[in-house]
Length: 118
Image (cartoon, rainbow, N blue to C red; front, side, top):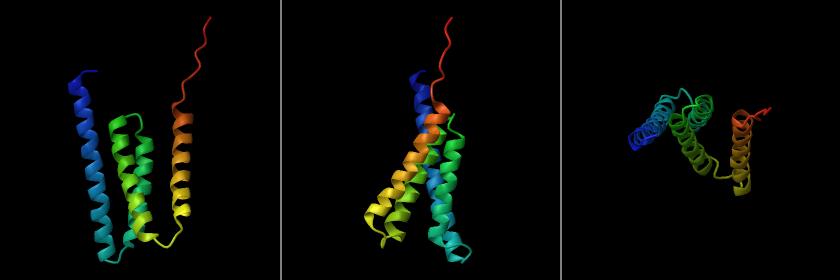
């Protein structure tokens, strides 16, 4: 893979990251101001959708990372700002559980297949 190809993938991943982050915040703000859905609830919904999209398109590494990084930012923001009354250990537990689930999914889905030699 040449440097131009790697650079394009990185740029594309950053564009996906920034667009999905801005889209999540803008739409959540719009829905919250119009009393359609709670602002924090909409951010949680977007974070969940971004995690699902990131896992579904995991074959395309730059797109997957763009969505997963956006989901990380949204989850951290919701946990910091909205759930301030929760104990820090509970917040760490939620993030840890999320990471464990993602690692288990990636381990089972992308584990190396055993090669049979004759």
